[in-house]
Amino acid sequence: MLLRSWIESANAPDHPFPLNNLPCGVFSTTGEEPRCGVAIGDYVLDVSSLEETGGLSLPGGPLLDVPFWNELMEAGPQAWAALRNRLTEVLAEGADDRAVVEPHLVPRAEVVLHMPFLVSEYTDFYAGRHHATNVGTMFRGAENALPPNWLHIPIGYNGRASSVVVSGTPVRRPWGQVKGPDHAAPAFQPSRRFDIELELGAVVGTPSDGPVTVAEADAMIFGYVLLNDWSARDIQAWEYQPLGPFQAKATATTISPWIVMKAALEPFRCSTPPREVPLLPHLQEPGPMLYDIALEVALQPECGVEAVIARTNYAEMYYSAAQQLAHHTTSGCPMNTGDLLGSGTISGPTKDSRGSLLELSWGGKEPIAIAGGTRTFIEDNDTLSLRGGCRGDGYMIGFGDCVGKVLPALADPYAR
Ligand code: MN
Image (cartoon, rainbow, N blue to C red; front, side, top):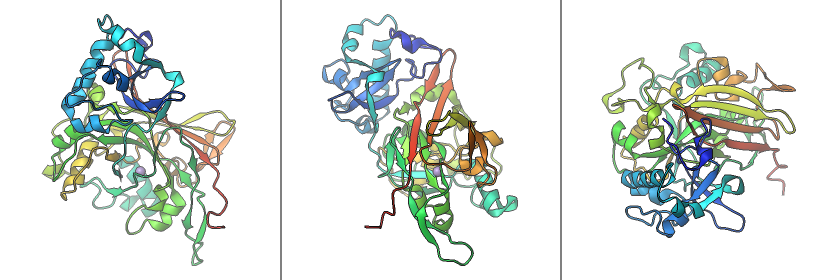
């Protein structure tokens, strides 16, 4: 049910940021340094200044005197709940403390958004069954689409934290080495098969040292962002065996600017699909660990009309973020505050629910229609937007768009 706020815009049934949501971002206004803010209706509440002036008191605080959310994340679930409880209290319809909050509200239209947290390390998974089946069918045939380990562990690789960027940051088409025809030498050239991957990113809040259970892993997660794992398919196809993707996915990873806290998503929990084969006990889930989050991908050519090219749902995943995080620790690998886990591409069962152009255009063989043209892979100056939200009873939980425009490749980066 909608929690009503005295900020009227937050009460609209389709608004992404009602009082139920309270997502965490980092913002700046003209001439000011970035600081922590929480989205509410058409405003951003400057929680850094609210804390500084005594309107918000957090256990172990101050925690918001830095332009990132890592300190609050590390403080743990008690501090996360304290933040939500206090903000829910002061922003609720009929609140006594309205005057405490009002000076710290900034119209959202006036802010620039920054990276909401310092990314410690970034790991990406391959945990969507429809995606893995589609890609496997294209490369190995339908018989051997899923690798033999796929139904037993969420497969992942260690990505790069250094190239994770916030929504709105342009992405430059990369150069890389690609396979030559037949026995010819490989070529070094701009990627011709540059692509997106529609994913959800889980943000690790509290650290671990040693193996954790799925339940413990779920408790460690602070929240979720939309994530676009930009992928150069031609570079990937040449480099990926036997150690997995490397430069193909190192150019950039874009995240949406607001971390939606796990608490806001609780009403939307749902179960992973039935297991085709039982998982070993340490990866079994004690309860529903996915979320019903409607997702879409839009593509807009330069000066063109935007087209929605895919619609799907996070509930399509075979493994949850909690299972991925638990698996990540089985070796004893410590996890840190600010670790980012990509879900893997989220594709649904139908042609129009595929979360990458590789799948949508079936390896480039079946161009998809957009207004005024077609696409196989991304063309220069295309803008790609990921969007997501949960629909509750009379309200939405929105994520804020995850947007990136692809700029043309530079001239040969080694010609100097
Ligand atoms: Mn990916």
